[in-house]
Image (cartoon, rainbow, N blue to C red; front, side, top):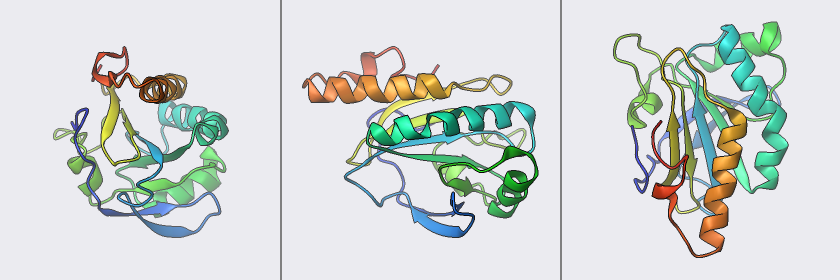
Length: 174
């Protein structure tokens, strides 16, 4: 799993946008913005549905905190579209389709046994470095509220000139 201080890969990924179209996103873009990237296991599962809806409910607060919110799983963007029209509902941030598993592999969250992404959240600073990371066991999803709190804590420490993200309660892998 990528750790604090490591640079995120500048790879191209395909995403389903909130407007329902497909778009290529380069993770190296928007170097002047914070990013929150979270992974979930599979589409069409109840736990993942609840987790993604929780992020959706907080999407505005992530944006107000100056962050670009992105979600990813090893499903294709076409599976994401099918899920948004058949159960998940409209989501206010891009859903990355990682059917090749390149993104999950680059971030170190690909489960070798299952071939799916593990639950994980990465806070990425404007320079493209991991500023915070949180992971969960395969059967326990992560909290959108905790991700927002982690983002705000790290930002506050940076503004105050006390970049101690490795010592923050959410600054390490759980």
